[in-house]
Amino acid sequence: MSASDPHTTTTRAARTRFAPSPTGFQHIGGYRTALFSWLLARHTGGQFLLRIEDTDTARTVPGAVDAVIEGFKWLGLEIDEGPEVGGPFGPYFQTQRRDLYLIYAEQLIAGGHAYRCFCTPERLQRVREEQRARSEPPRYDRHCRYLTPSEIAAQLDEGQSYVVRLAAPTSGKTVVKDALRTEIVFENASLDDAVLLKSNGLPTYHLANVIDDHLMLITHVLRAEEWIPSAPLHAITYQALGWEPPIFAHVPDVLAPQGGKKLSKRFGAIPLLEYRERGYLPAAILNYMALLGWSYDDKSNTLSREQLIEAFDLDRVGVAPARYDEERLLWFNGYYIRQLAPEELTGHVLPFMERVEAEGGLPDSVARPLDRAYTARVLQLEQERMKTLADAPAMTSFFFVNALSYEPRTLIAKHMDAERTLDGLRRSHATLAALTGWEAAEMEARLRELVAELGLKPVQLFTSLRVAVTGRTVSPPLFETMETLGRATSMARIEQAIEALAAYPG
RNA sequence: GCCCCCAUCGUCUAGCGGCCUAGGACAUCGCCCUUUCAAGGCGGAGAUCACGGGUUCGAAUCCCGUUGGGGGUACCA
Image (cartoon, rainbow, N blue to C red; front, side):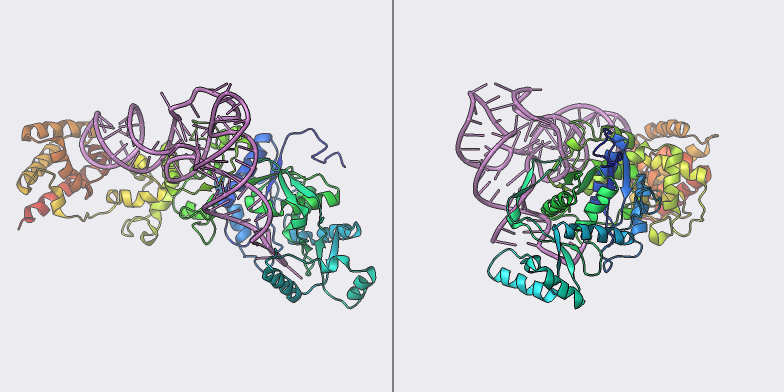
C-alpha cells in the first residue's frame, strides 16, 4: 500500500463522493444523500467529489450532468473534485475510464475471482423462466463458470462475445458492515454471479464503483439503501482485489408524500432546480433535507449551513425511511425569508416580480425594470407573509398597478352599511387631505380620532380604507401601506372608492 | 417465490435499561397581541412507543417471533 492510501494514514478526514448516473434529473432524495456526504467531508475537513456513472450509455440523458452540477452550485455545496473542476484522480466520467476497468477485470479473471461468460441473452432469459417455473430464485446458473480452458479458447477463437462475471463464493457467509446498522449477514449460497463487465467492454456498477472508490481514495460510501442487496458482491470484489473496503453507510429512502413508496422521478418528486423556480431558498432546502433522516438533538430545528457542518455526524443518521413533507419545507422557507436582510430580500425577489405575468410575475402592464428602492419598501411590508419568493408578485401587485379592480360591496365592513361607509370614506379623505405630511404614525393618529368621533370601531373604518387603497380585504398594515403607496395614489384610490360606492346600491 | 432493510404523535424526529405520567418541530385547535392577514407569545389536543413472547428488580430502549411497510432479484444504476 502506498503512503497516500487512506487506510494506512491516521487522518480522520473523510473523502466522500456523490456518484449519480446521468439518466434524468436529481430530486430531493438524491441531493439529501449527497448533502450527508458533503457534510461528512466538510465536518472532517476532507473532500467531496462528484463522479458521473455513465456506463449505461443507452440511458444517458444530455444535459443531466450540467443540471446536477448546477444544483450543487445553487445549494452552495462546493465540489472539490469532479467533472467541471477536475482533480488528481480523474477522469470523473466512467466512460472515460474504461481501460482501467478492463485491466482489473483481467486481474480478477487471472486470480480466479471472475470468469468469461458466453451465454446469450436468450439463454439467460430461458434459464430464468425455468427457475421461476420451479419457483426458484432467478439467477445465473453458472454455466460458463466451469468451462475448461480449451472450451474457453474455442469460444474466443470463434469471436464469441462475452461478459465477465464475478465468481461468487457458493458457501459460507459474507458480512457487510454498515456504519448505520448492525452487521448484515448474507448466505453466499444465495448470491448471484453478477456481471462485472458488459459485452461492450464497459463495466457495470458493481465493478466500476469498487474500482473508482478505491482509486479515488474514497473513505466513506454513502448511498441509498437500495444498494444493500448488492453490497456483499462489492465486499467480495474488494477482497478479491486485495483492497480494504471503505466504510459503507446505506442511508434510508425519502418517501413520496402519498403512499409508502420511494420518492422518484415518476412518483412525487420534482427536479431540485424546480424549487429555485418556485421561489425556495437554498438555506431552507438544505435545512429541511438535513433533517430528513438526521437530527442533532431533541431541540434544534433551524440550523445554518455552518451549524450543519459543525454538528453533522454519521452516528446521528437514522435508518427508517422519512416522508417528504411539503408543509414543513414551506415553513422552513418562510422562516429563512424572514431572516433575510432588506437588501437580500429585494435581490432575491426582484427576478420573480419582473417575470412575465404568464410565468407568475407582476401584470404585464407594470413597466420593467421595477424601481428598486420602491420595491424594497414594498417587500419589507410583505416579508413576514411570504412562504416562497414566488408569492411576492400576487401579494404586492396593488402596489404597482394603475387601476384596482374589486367589488364595491367589499368596501362595507361587518356591521356597517353603504351609507355609513361612504360617510367614513369621505371624512377619512378630508382628514388625510388636511395632513401636511404623509407618515404612517400621523395618519394613524388622525384617523383614530376620526374613528372615535364617528363612534365606530377601528376595524369598521379601516377595513373600508384597506379595500379602497389596496382593493383587497387582506393586506399589510394599512398606514404603512398608504405611506409606501404615496399620497397621490392613496388619495386617488379613496376618491375612486367613494365614487364606486356612491353608485353601488343603484 | 427467495434475499435484505425498516417500524415512537397525521408528518420529521428526541430517546441508545431506571431522568419517560415519552421531549421538540411542522401541521391542527384555542387564547393573547391586533386595523385585516401574517409574524410573535401562551396553551390544548394528538403516540396503549406495530403486535406477541421473553431477558431484567426495572424495556420505547436488549433478544426471538408475528404482522405491516419498503427495497433487491437486469449485459440499469
